[in-house]
Length: 166
Image (cartoon, rainbow, N blue to C red; front, side):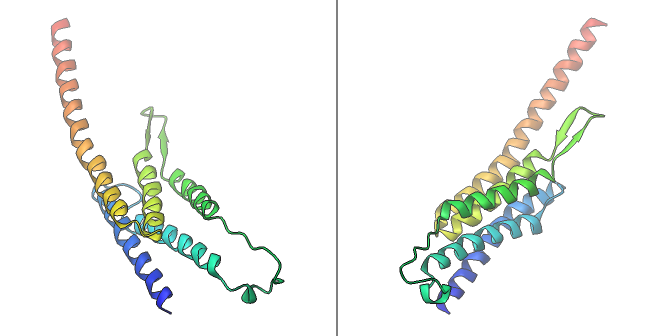
């Protein structure tokens, strides 16, 4: 019962941290926002926590002979999460042949990071989880501002060069 409440608390923390990443995507008007990122982080955390529970599961409850070896591999759980999340992220990527550009890559990446945050919470690495969320916010918001400034300067330079040729 105590372990169940602890896992529920971990999932809630992962949900909140994933939601923070999703809120940034929501504010940027991207296809996957707060709910998606929150649920991805919560699910990843829950899968890892359930894997942890399975490691400690009583052999009698598995109806397996006492001399049988039950193997669990937490890395396989993480691999399964990455595979599933990659398909979800791929759904957010759109290629526009009209404008010859690809959109949704950052959102797909943030979905993957939200899953990693969930795994990080599940293994009780709180500082890493919170730090990753802060880094993601910096990348998504801070770098976007820098990109916007660089694009403005490119446009001005291109406009000035265009006037010189006329």
